[in-house]
Every structure is written in structure tokens, then in C-alpha cells.
Length: 115
Length: 113
Image 1 (spheres, rainbow over the protein chains, first blue to last red):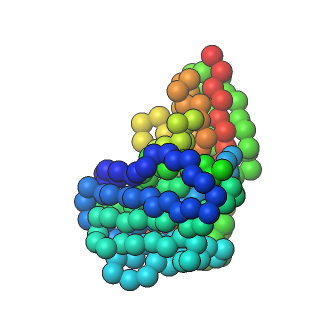
Image 2 (cartoon, rainbow over the protein chains, first blue to last red):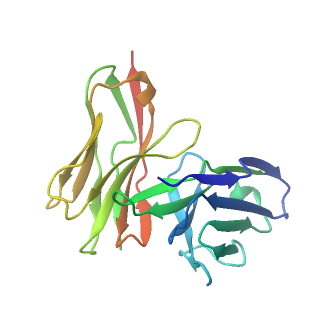
Image 3 (tube, rainbow over the protein chains, first blue to last red):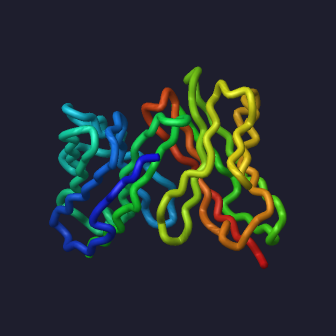
């Protein structure tokens, strides 16, 4: 199984600022994803982080608001830009592991509160 | 388009009894995977069980089993011998061709002593 380190675990930010969330995996993985979980809601896929190329964003999410980097097969960052209170959510990094069947593993999440 | 439906917002079960959490899905992908995750109040997402669309047998992992009925497009999670620590949110998820994964709305399970 993949071990994922995600940080920060939580942050309180001011409106209009930006926060970068880091995701480090203990092994090389092809597929990395970023999800958002708004309070009391399910997980919504923001984008697929592609190594060496631009991320693939889902409908409703744009690169200017959620820029993503993926410099190698073990690391990715998600930036939440120009934050507003509506961005208050849990942000989760996940990776697809193909050993012993297909499994999607998650980091511990980043609890973001925007004031 | 892919869609995951969980119709039970909340469920109660008596400790030591079995409980079934429902999940139906819709996809046009010929190959896909179905997953169940547990999210306790701490917020972490814990992988429970996986079923491939071409797997002939239903998946089992300890007290968890997946009742996969392909023709009905359902993938229900069965938890046997419920424990107090099973109280959590449970999410069903699907990956088509394993390029993207989509989650249902979740079921909040409460285990009563």
C-alpha cells in the first residue's frame, strides 16, 4: 500500500490569500488526484495531476483558481488561490496503487478554513 | 457519464448484528472498479474493499463483503458483526478504466450498544 504524507493538516487563512498543499508519496505512482470535500458533503474530484504536463481539471474547476504541480512521480502540490469563505473544505490528495488489485489511497487531508 | 448513488443518508444497526449499505452505479465503461471507504469523524479516508467488474466472485475483506450484482449495477457493502468502532460515514466509489474516481453521497452508520 502507498503511504501518503499531506501537509498542512489544517490552516486558517484570510480572504484573498493563497495556500499551497503538499502531497508526498513513498513510492512512484502514475495516477494522483486532488479532491475537495465541503462540510457534510461527499468527495468531488478537482483534477488529475499529470507528471510532466498540465493537470486535467473537472468541470467547475479551473487552473487559475487551483493550480497544480506534479514535478515527479512521488510529489504534487495544489494551490487554492485568492481564497474566499466558500473555499473552506477538506482537500484530499489520493493515489492509485496497482499492486494486489486496484486501490485508491488517500492522504490525511487538509482542513482549510477561510475567514 | 458515470454516476454513483447511495440512497441511505443514515443507518442504525445494533452492535454484533450485520448491516447492508446500498450502492448503485451507472457507467458505459466496459471495465471498472468499485470501492468502499470508511470516513470516521477524524476525516481520514480508509479503504475497505475493492471489486473489479470482471471478478467472478464477490470480494471479501475480514468482516466486510461486497455483494456485487453486475446486471443490476449494484455493489452493496455488508458489514458483519458490527462494532461500535464501525460508526462512521461510508462512501461507495467507482473508477472507470481507473482514470477517474467518483464518489456517492455517503451513508452515515451508527452502531448502537
